[in-house]
Image (cartoon, rainbow, N blue to C red; front, side, top):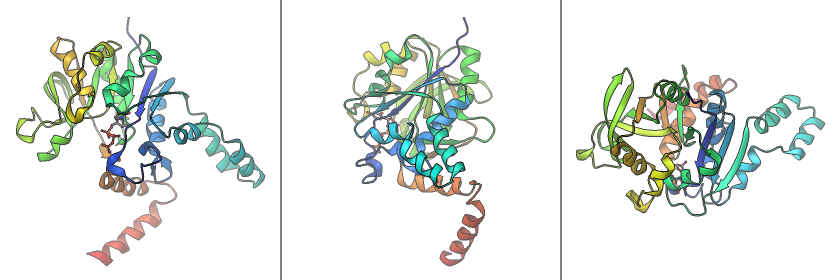
Amino acid sequence: MRQKIRKAVFPAAGLGTRFLPATKASPKEMLPLVDKPLIQYSVEEAVGCGIESILIITGRDKTAIEDHFDISFELEQVLLERGKREMFELVRSVSELAKISYTRQKQALGLGHAIYQARDFVNNEPFAVLLADDVVDAPEKSALQQLIDVFEKYQSPVVATMRVEGEAISKFGVIDAEQIEPRVYRIKDMVEKPKYSEAPSDLAIVGRYIFTPDIFQFIERTEKGAGGEIQITDAMRLMVKEGKPFYAVELQGTRHDAGDKLGFLIATVEYALKHEELANDFKNYLKSLYERIR
Ligand code: UTP
């Protein structure tokens, strides 16, 4: 039977050490990219792909995320009283985006361990995983939709990748793969954060995945890897080593690492330049800034 992707999991329990002190008391997924928190972009991406139910894996200080997607009666009341109907609709629409539930990863033991917390929610269905700090600006087709298209064809797990040049590859999980279609690969092996000289290719894994429920058995068998964490790449690797088909898509679009200070600044500029209300004024500001600093 061909299966549809109806569920999505959002791990948001990382410590966000690269973005301290901003992430000391608030999850990095709540950092605002222009006027929306990072996690709202990827929730909208998932909803746009037909995802019906969402599980957010939170760590400490989860309340900001829950509050964001909940109804805010007090705020709504004030907006209505002040005649700010449009703003009211905007605020209300966030709480109506999707059916969202939450679970806790008690300790940040790694992405593999975070995803493992979703096993009851997922039950026995294939599911998507989105990392909200990987922002993918894909004007034609969203990143998740690109993965879903491959899943629908091959009915096997799929991971998003992009090409990374030079030493920077060592920050990623990297695949060794055979191309089977334009932008689609069958994975032969993968490794988390390899040395540049040992990277099997320049195709780096980025934060969008589609898993089948058997991933949980492989996470159970995964030992601590890079950084002393249970790495999802290691669990995926076990799967591939046992001959399970696993695919990769080379994403069309631009990916920003918004969990990194510089990546976040770049994403902010790019998104501000596309923002309906801000684009013109911001462009003028950037032009004058350029004159000042060049
Ligand atoms: P990162 O690799 O960006 O780690 O996690 P991090 O801890 O969040 O941030 P840094 O590197 O210390 O700055 C990738 C994704 O996996 C989630 C994060 O929330 C992020 O979405 N994650 C990571 C968890 O949910 N739990 C973990 O134990 C680790």
